[in-house]
Image (cartoon, rainbow, N blue to C red):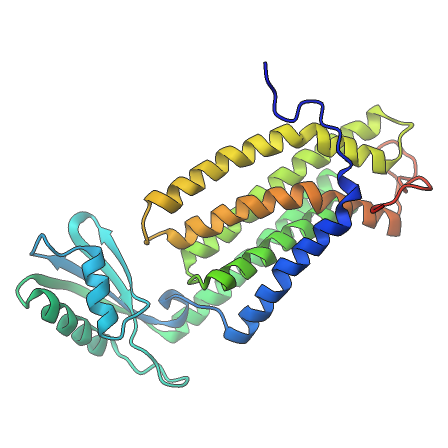
Length: 322
């Protein structure tokens, strides 16, 4: 039976310098662009108005509503069906001047109603309800999203520290930090809107990337016991190669699902689909080319006793890059 990457024997650690260079070249400019331009936040994080719309005309569709609202100044409006096909939820805000949030719920509702009436006619729809999301609530949601990301990292570090030891935990967390920073750079390049759905995608990436890394580190721990005469450089390379078929197949199947979302799910969750698709790619990259070289570098700087009870420092002559 054909097995992908069967008997793989690549010197992965030899390419660590190239991998770090690629990661830096991709990530750093994106983060600089994000810092200069600022994040493109959704109304859940900035404040805005939510309107539930009941369409009486069957010709009213999501794209038509979006087009009508864009012409009225709602360029970033989020529109999705809610329940039946003729029920829509619109999240929108009027353009702001400076730092002032100039719209109220009534003003936004009136502007949307006027725009839709001009496009479809006054009797073609009915506004069921309108609710405001104030700037204070948006600020609280931003803070909670930041706390969620930080708590996820903290929980990961503590879990791996207890399961392995702090060197493994540090390498895994740093590799995951790379994935999140690279994803933020990707968001910046694509100018994706950061919404709660995108934050959910970021949290999913943390778990996915960590899972891949743990599989490799589990094999490292097994091989440390099995091959007592080998140095950690050889063991890390061997462990990456042994888990390579599983890593590639898992990533391939997951990527297929995220691509299906990206192509078929539409604009409602397109941000989530883009983030997840890129997250699978960068998570696979980091689990192969980032996590183990980081572990090797940490072991060199702070050598400690491994599971064999011996100092796990790299043998003389073994290098991360050649």
